[in-house]
Image (cartoon, rainbow, N blue to C red; front, side, top):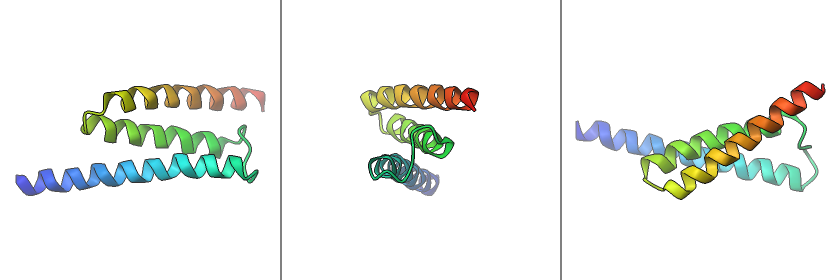
Length: 87
């Protein structure tokens, strides 16, 4: 059983790092002008990144980070839906 817990902890850490990489990558692409905020990929990078950070933060009991990422997720979903309706 202990091995299962260690393996799950490692998976949660990987999810957190991948999620952070997605959000940072999205920000870098926007800041460098290689992507526009209305593009679905930008919003999906933020949506998936926020979900990953919610999982990681919740697992680690970092509730302010969970709250931040719930809001981040909501903003990204709203923006994605809005851009989808515009096209």
